[in-house]
Image (cartoon, rainbow, N blue to C red):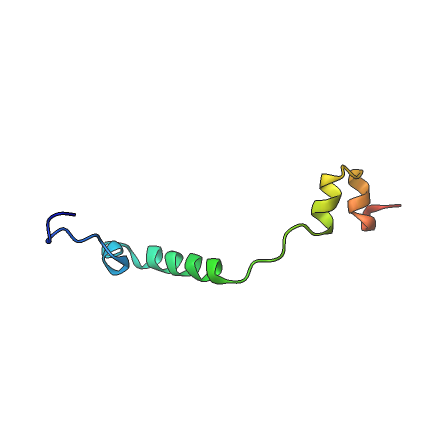
Length: 63
């Protein structure tokens, strides 16, 4: 970085050679990553952590 002509590629310069499909996928992934995430550690995760029997996590499968 001692040379003033050495400019690190910015976000606009990184994607010059991508196809339209690659650009669409990159923008879609960025949009999905920006969405709020669901809270972790819900009922299913607690059941798995406590080693509950498999059938108990699926009440609709009981006879």
